[in-house]
Amino acid sequence: MSDGSPNSRDRVFEFIVRYKREHDGLSPAIRDIAEGCVLHESTVRYHLMRLEIEDRIRVLGRRAIEVTGGVWDLPPDEVPDAASDDAAPDREHDSPPDAPESPPDAPGGDSDPHNHEAGKRG
Image 1 (cartoon, rainbow, N blue to C red):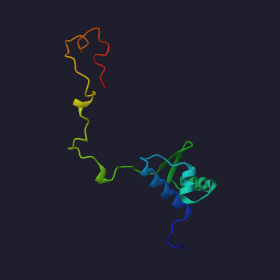
Image 2: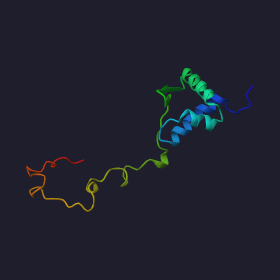
Image 3: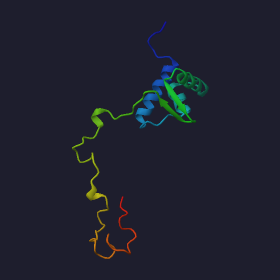
């Protein structure tokens, strides 16, 4: 009989999902999960193993935890608008504001055969 409160395994799963949302998809350490769920680290390891068997997560290596079917998108109110200035990089302002631009035919310019940096922009 359940009183509606999540069991330890569900708390571990919910902690992982919440942590990944708050940390741009990074996985929590076992210690983080143990502290957040008030569990012993060995109990967390057991729940991680059971969650993996239940196909709710995949443990990749020592630290990476992948939530099966998890997508870490920005909430709709935080997605940059494609029409806004912040959405696309501004190519005019890629170089520092103090850097003067040389005309292509000036010494050191893009067409100078002695300029080894010509064409290496990025």
